[in-house]
Length: 469
Image (cartoon, rainbow, N blue to C red; front, side, top):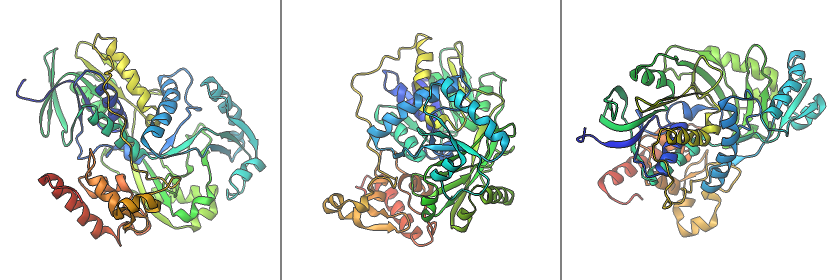
């Protein structure tokens, strides 16, 4: 086993939860590997969620999820301030359109209080319309949730993974796990880029978590890929949706939301469709028809605005109403599965929980006292000044005043910085998530060639040891 990289803990899956856990464990004296099958962190389920920092008001009281979302809300909120992850405290309102939904609102307010969140308030139809004047006809009432916020999921994932690496974790990209073998003291992960040896394995593989779990001899759950399609409307539509408009959950499901985004757009979605293909992130005609129908009811005027993008994400649905965190002491293996969309909010609390579970086994997870400062992330949000708006930055470095992507106002300095960062992009999608380049109205039609050339130059310079310019 000595001929292969060997670690105290290997965390499989570099999404939000895996990156948070790797960061937490890398803050101890343990050696940590963050093992990811794709070419970048946050390139799976984590990149395509609704990007809401949840208060946990509607979680099922008493569940692990409710506890960790409530804790994670505060942890991630503080971490965002430290690292510059963009957050907007927009608040939210649940809108009742039917008598069934209206009668459900008091129960949701009571559930929020049971979860320790007491800021919700029942409001009338007129008060709902005062908050969101452009809503369609037929509003019957609402419930405000002032603590709900929007956040940049891309920056969150990258910040956590960057922090993990700077704390000493080793990021192993393009290491798709195909098999495991354990002798009780060590586990060998056979991956697409060679073997990785670890004393402990933490499974945060998302859509592949059940398959990794089966490699350890378990047969306790199955992941169903659940596709959620969304529309992204042009920034001119943003004043129409000043707050998150949440559906009222009923016996038929949670429904579709309207939300502003941290980038200045408006989002409509998601759909909810169970699939069998764990790679099918394509959009569909039926999904578009569904969203258009919902949009006509929620806010007809919004459909007159331009759609700049549509996308689909896959959620790792399991047959459980709670997170599935299970420890196999004999195999030195910990499963963290069934982490639904609330995993963005609960990620740092889940990491704390995992450290506690490992501590109970006797593993030394004492924090180090020589940790580096958290990384300061580039601002991708519209609520704060972007580089092209900062005369001080441009005076120091004119590259921050040289706009490359005009739709999103991304500068040459930002692209250069991304290419020279701790976890640099290897493709255009990775660069999009780090800078917003090509994410606007033209979707790269105007700037794509220039952005691609700058990325290629950055990759070449980094691999040859030349300074990235």
